[in-house]
Amino acid sequence: MGGIAEVARVAGVSKSTASRALTGNGYVSPATRERVARVAEDLGYVASSSASSLATGRTRNIGVVMPYLNRWFFAEVLEGVQEVLLAEGFDLTLYDAKPGTEGRRRVFDDFLARKRFDGLIAVALEPDDHELERLVGIGRPVVSVVGDSDQTSVVGLDDVHAARRATAHLVDLGHERITFLGGISDHEGPHVDRERLGGYTSRMRDAGLRPDHAPSEVSLPGGYDVAVDLLSDPDRRPTAIVAACDEVAIGAIIAARRLGIAVPSALSVVGIDNHEYSEMFGLTTLEQSPRSQGAAAARLLLDHLRSPGTDRTQMRLHARLIVRGSTSPPPGTPSVAVGVIP
Image (cartoon, rainbow, N blue to C red):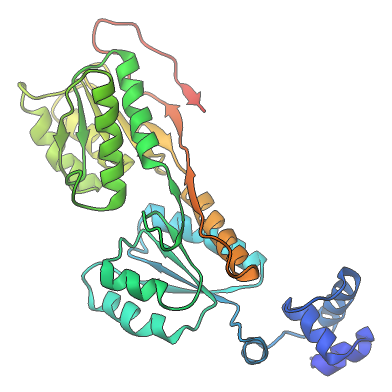
């Protein structure tokens, strides 16, 4: 395996030019960069990341902090981030920061302080004031996937728009008794849950209808448990449910089936996310793409690295409505087609 000196000799350039061509730090003409890269590949040369870091002050490593590693949304975001970083020649260091754990404390108090990365992607962290201060104080570019901080760039779904559209779909079908299932309140809980509840509430009021919120944990078991209680009460039972997310919606569908309530003829259910299981349950949903959000966050962070001092960006994406078999008009009215509505 040849060293950088051998690569430079064969390519007919200086060692500094060869180094710039392989690391991407500093200007080199496209033709020279291509020639040096070809020679390096022929000689089996791999640039030392530690040497590059010492020479440039860059690690070519991106830190990714997320609260859960085993949930669908976070795994999809991570795949999108990794795809972009690998294509650009960056390494990735993953930090698991589950809420309320000693591991999370160590991530914020110790690992992030070491700054062994060029930039940071924070995925749905919902940091408290102390943690947010540490994030923005690390002296590296930070991009958040999901969140409402004006101190970092943010990539995320327009959750108010998604919930309003989910509610509008049911209103347009003729439903009036529509319950929002999931989340805590419009003043507490994660930002995403508050935004989705707020979108539902505002659309209901626009239609002259009374909002009804059934709080639950934002999970399949959480949605199931509260839906059993809600649907077994004939005085409160709605004809339709807007769920805080698809997992909550699927929990509600399972609860309805076990109670003998037919979906959608007696109960319509719409979710938000287009979870990997949503099609299996025939769930009408508002589709977001976590993988696309992860890729967009990685590209945005790399833009910040290439152009330090650029303004922070708030990128809010709109979800599309996918109509499947879990929604229909109330009993006694015609059915509707199934399909995708952009």
